[in-house]
Length: 365
Image 1: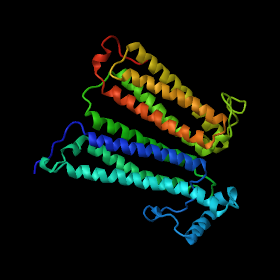
Image 2 (image 1 turned 120 degrees about the horizontal axis):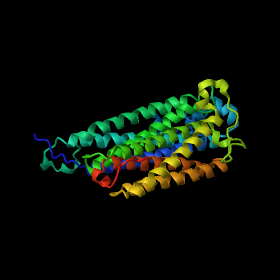
Image 3 (image 1 turned 90 degrees about the horizontal axis):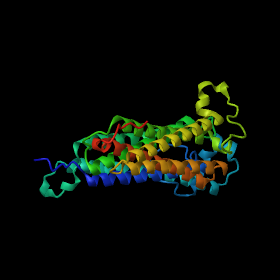
Image 4 (image 1 turned 180 degrees about the vertical axis):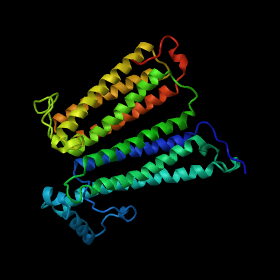
């Protein structure tokens, strides 16, 4: 049996990957709502299969509520909560987990089909569903990371079930960071599937600059997770100072954990990274304009600076309004948008033609 046609481009695979990326984006949004409504600890057990069914009768609801009443969050923060109020937070966490299950299915089943269809003869009619070899391992890695995300999600939740009233900041940042890593990986692989394998490299200056910006964006996302976990946005709500100081007192008695847990320090680091990212994106865009970059590179550079600027303004507005749910979720969604644009920008740079830079030395800085 001959292997079917395996084109350099795989549009069907690309559409599937972009669709999964959209679902991951939705997952980030729902995760933000879950966090800001205090819903994340409402389900105190991890049942990957049986947990897909919510409580179906009064007895089931009472049992789920009883288990929630045993954890510190209820006893310290939500004591006296009614069953109806519990159901309100339960449904957000259930939808968050259910969306994760759905993403797993949408990732696994089409991938299995693509892997099987590529060995079918052309006359079976599946030519356009082939997956080139170079994409297979990337999709398998993304599937594996999705499974790992479920485990890390429970690892995060478990940190708030015994001694804490919320989840550990470093575990929240890990969970959010892996979601963003999967999101960027889906976009990158989708672009490779849609446009085909890259054939050339851009000069090292531009490639490094674009990679540094993507790294700064990802680091800023992790710092944002620490800010959310430490609830620093509810404590230091003025700008550009922090409660009237450049840096409020830090509890250094925690040692190195202060960089993960201290509200003042994590928000200060988040602000510093935001300034660095804004300046870096501005310099990158100016350099792109100076060299008159073609084939979408200039547009990508200015798009990246644009979304970084909007996200910075949104962050300040969210902060001074003490993180209302709507603005908080919009800011978290904005982080995903910035990461997606930074990923697209680096991908464009890495596959650009060297002739674009023939008019002068191609260095970013």
